[in-house]
Each structure stands twice: as C-alpha cells, then as structure tokens.
View 1 (cartoon, rainbow, N blue to C red):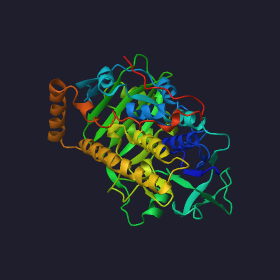
View 2: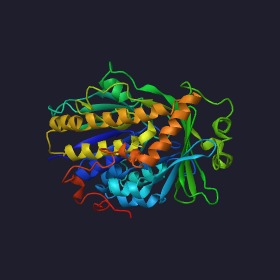
View 3: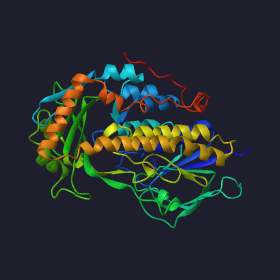
View 4: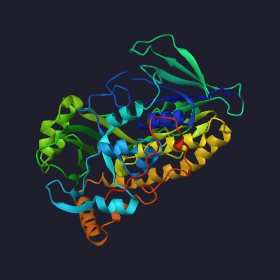
Length: 428
C-alpha cells in the first residue's frame, strides 16, 4: 500500500501539531508556510525576545502528551502559585490559586513563549517537511471516495520570498490551518459569514522581568484590560486589550499607544512598558466566529484552529482548541481508514465542542468592553463578591474544557516520532 500524503497549510500551533501527529500516524507530510522569517509559526520564527506567550491548559498538554511533547512544553513554563485580579489603581479584587486548578483539572495552566513552542513542534518534523516562503491556494477539495480525485493545491513562491510561476501539488488530505482570514475556508464555504470583529484590539509583548515580579495578574479598567504573566528565563509576557474601532494603528508606535492607555496604571505596568522595544509590540484586532460553519471539512480538506473557530482570548483556549483539533483529526484519519467517514467523524466530534468554547469565551469577552463608570463599578463588586463567596467561579468557566482528554487508545503510542508518549504529570 502506497504511503498516504498530507499537505498542511500554515505552520502555527495547530498546523504544526497536525503535521507532527499525521507524521506519527504514518502520513507523508508537507507543511506550507507563506512567511520566511519574522512571524511566529515559521521554523526560524522571530527572536525569542519578541512575539507573544501562549497559555496551554491541561487539555492541550494532554493532547501534546500523545506526541511525546507534553513534558517539554511543561518545562518551558514558569511555575506560578497565585495570581491576582486588580483595578487600574492597584486595588485587588480577587486572588487565583494554581493549586485549585491542579485539583480541578489534573494540572496547571502553562504559559510559554509561542515561538519556542512552534520551534519545538517544527523540530519533530522530518527534514524537508516544512516549506516556507510559499503561498498555497486550494484548487480542488478532491473526493475522499474516489482514489483518482485527490485534493489539489497551487503554491507560488520560491522559498526565499520571491515569486515564481507556481506549481500544483496533490494530496490525499489537506489540513487548512491558515488562520482567522482563511482562504481555504472561503474556498470551501464561500457563502458562510466571515469572522466578525469582537469589539476589541489586542497588544502583546515579551520583556525582561523587573526585579521581584513573580506573580501573574490581570487588571480590568473601563473598556480595557491588562495582563502580566511570568515566563521562564526571567521574562514577562504582557497582553492588553481595548474596546476601539477595528483596523487602527498608532500614529507613532504601539508602545507609545500602550503608554497613553495604560502608562498611569499600577506597578508594574509602567515599568514593563518602559522596558519594551517598540519594534516587538504586536497589535491585532480580535475576531470571533460569526456563526457555526456547515462542517469542519469538505472533500479531502479539513479545517482546524482559527481557520474554522476563531475565538476571543478570554478563556485562553484558542491555541488549545487548535491542538485538540489536530490530535483528534490524526487519530481518526488513519492512512488505511475510510477518509470520508474519518472526516465526517472529525466534524461531529469537534464542531459542537469548539463552538461551545467560542460562545463561552465571547460571553466573558463582552465584559471587557464595559466602559461606563456605573457598569465598571458593578463589575468590580461582582468580581469581589464572587471571589469571597465562590472562589472557584473562574475555574468553573473551564469545566468541560480544561478537563478534556484525548481519545482512548490514541495513535501516538506507536514508535514513530522522536519520543514515546508522556503521561500527564500531576503538579502538586
């Protein structure tokens, strides 16, 4: 039996996880990435001082355990015992306890540098599997019931950033992990509503940690939010959101914009902004799925991650759900399996679950857009009361999400890949 071929469009967290998982499953995998350097998700990626962090909850860690990558990712995180929710002046509304998350979900949330996680995954691919500097366009979704009708993808680009006349590739399976504005999704479902702006834009930055800063915190202000999370290696991952019109850019630079919006907030916010290199501050509008898609697949093409279920970052599940998608897809799509049945099962398992996460994240995200004084005061009172009377309320928002486990008998227990399966670790 010939080896089945798979093309993965996009080398972000979800695309690389899918590529590693399919490789371990026995597929011949090629990853197509449009960038060459300078963006998270490429093999070389940005310098580790720039970019952003990613929160990996226990559900994502268990999925990565099936690839033998869970322990390596857990080692990237800086262990944190507590965190705080504050107001811009510094008043503490609530404390969070990592040990409570361990008890409830079997492990902590690990926050790591996104570029380091993608580099870890890319290193688990066979040599030559990742092609950068090429743009992929879906030509034909193919027919999984017909051996003589593979999916067809046209790629342009030479790999060094210059254009060429292009070439056409065929594959038994195409995994479209090409992000929020997915061209593959538009080609498969041209009448489906595009993701909609969630009402906030987000900034992300990684800076050296000021002396003595070891605790995570999130601060809620009028129509805005600031978060600080320690990373390994003496670094801080900071993120911020503000309810502003989409498509905006600072007239000077984005660090200056953050200083205008957050420069008078409590310590350590001003110190973190003072330490930031303006060139490394990322700004992106936040989008969420406007409606459930008809399916997560069509023909021989499977969509995953932001390409099919973009969500607000309020539950920290965007990357986690993409990782889940990838592991479930590879588990179902054994090379010898009925691919039509496997892709239909992928849609059945992933569509309702991920869209529930989208809706839950969006409900929390709407709280971030409250601007009026009375509304913000009410929000602060509710947070403080909930912290006293129901200290596990924040964790309850992740019930049915962070406790997810990979399918029983997951494929990766075989011998392919660089390491054996690691069991989920309990952190005490």
